[in-house]
Length: 153
Image (cartoon, rainbow, N blue to C red; front, side, top):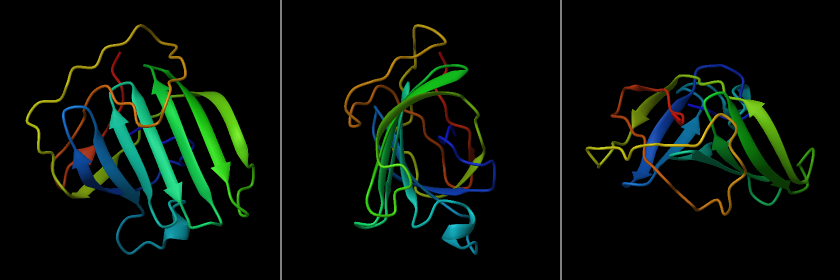
């Protein structure tokens, strides 16, 4: 999976929803690992939707983080928003970063669609997208599989 700014490490995911346009994961530390040891805290929601990957991290009023990335073959353009009293850098920013896919073990949930929508794009340098709720394609796996999720353009 492409997980913005995450260190390469073992992670676990549950599929919490999917349809023909997107798959929603709950990303956490592997079982038995405290949340503060893998950087996922209470867990992060990741929505894989074709060329767009969205992230939601909510730790009460103290910290909220969202990001929406337009993912290409080698680069992603991401708009991030952080807020709350524990946010190191509150506000909104846009960044371009290299796409590094990392393995994530899917431990629960399942894909209800048998086919994923095709994913197409216009090139290697995506542009920022609009609202975090917009979706364009689907990627999904069965329980116990290792997910390598990213846009193929």
